[in-house]
Image 1 (cartoon, rainbow, N blue to C red):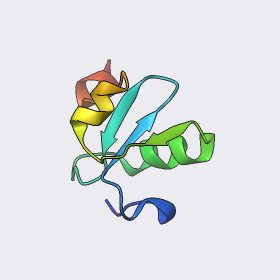
Image 2: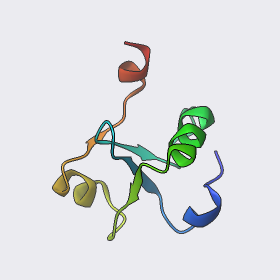
Image 3: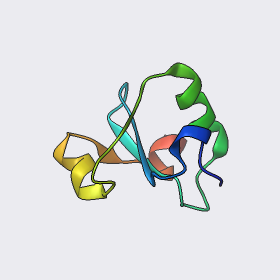
Length: 69
């Protein structure tokens, strides 16, 4: 999926409501999930833009299995 407008430089985006982070380069990521997150304005970007930094801030990696549950 393409990255949202203000986040072209970021690969990972976090959802403050669920504490999940999303890999915007994941080809299996549902664009609707990211669009809803952007519309909610409840997101966070990380610097440095790494999974380790997201985990350091208490976020967990989003999994398709979580979405299907």
